[in-house]
Image 1 (cartoon, rainbow, N blue to C red):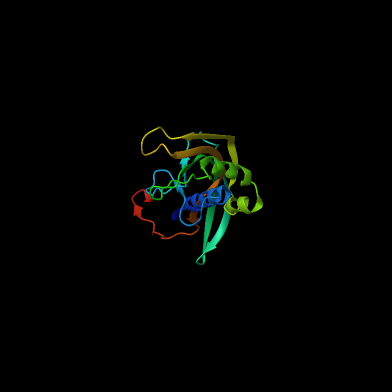
Image 2: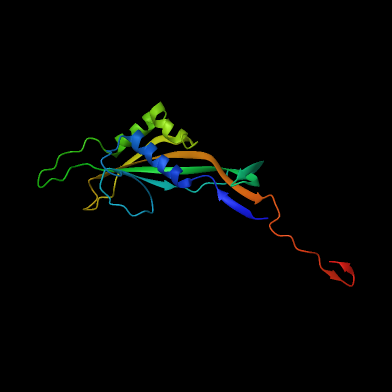
Length: 197
């Protein structure tokens, strides 16, 4: 009997859906990639958003469901385990407060705070929420308080605005264990002086 473990939940697709959700809700420009998961290398050209996972407690024990499936004419026994997951995610928007085109500086009116406010205002509109519903992901703002701010007054950063909000994304992770339901080999019994072994 062979056993096969199959991760049925595609977490990469979930991460991509969350990125698309933030991009669509915030109103960030769509000319290039603007939403990134922290810890990845990317070209930091403002405006953009960075998503960070926050520590969270376990959300409960898994449960399973049994079924029989046919794969390539082989009948298999399949146990699917469902494990709730919850991702507390911090979304940080960063923008410039001035454009930098030679000696002339023009104020940027669409600053980080506005992208964060857009995200909260639009999160539950049908075209936005359908992005996560396609991946069976539930979501809710953890807090509707936007934490605005300007980075510390360092020469390079004093004209960068930032704003932070938090969302919780949750769903069910599905993992299957499949057993082939037949004998792969049959061995003849061996005899010894005590009988059948």
